[in-house]
Length: 324
Image 1 (cartoon, one colour):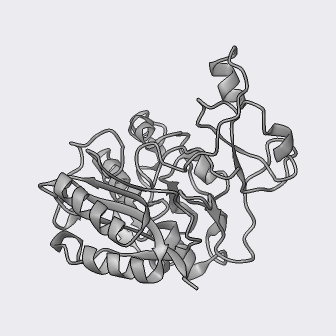
Image 2 (image 1 turned 180 degrees about the horizontal axis):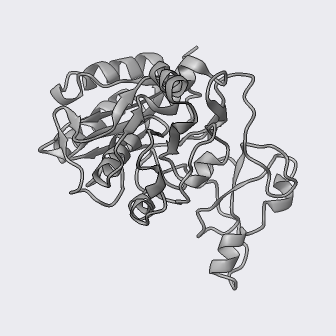
């Protein structure tokens, strides 16, 4: 019986011909019957793919033969074989869609001017040394943080990655400039760019959690500074690092704890709603409040099961839940 896994990785390096890399990656993934998403840009590659263990091993082996991707840090997690219904390999101007492709420079050594990398152990050491002065800064979209985040984290009120630059430029976080700020995200790639954007805006002591929440959870689970569930961009929708994890999310109907996201009934709406299993039948045909406010005259209409897909990259953006 086949064992299925999911791999998550990114590689930062200038790619003179992203289209050639796209075609190569599509052919390689198809050859090994993999599904998931790969983004290629002039800044590098970002991928989340599912398949059998052996197929993924062969795919990773060949991908690492590319000089720009020889040192990619591949994170593995449990899969089902049906985590992604299809394969998508696209070329984008940015690996992470902050909307400022010319503001951050990427060289063979990675992002120029990014925050200092902290391993999970380094993070604990910094917190032990600096205490409450350390700021954990969530580099994900706000809805992801609803079900899990680092204790006491600052969570910017953004729905998409593109809103981050305006949020930083608003001056809302200027009071953090003199404190150690640790950016974090799911797998680490958003913070490669976010930490550089913050440094350019005068934040003097900026760090990035190397390997993201995924790597931290592998080492410390729910026994450290992380609380709750981790939102993921595949059919699972969320994962817990161990049996002691309790989601920070609350059902919008009964206020009970839940990590389950449900679709708005309106096919044109991408809002995800936190609704527990008990309340799901009640709200299955209801439009969300944001949708009603935006289009009060529209009728409720149930959308067919959708494919989880990020709005701009698979490590960020609102999605439609699948299987809910």
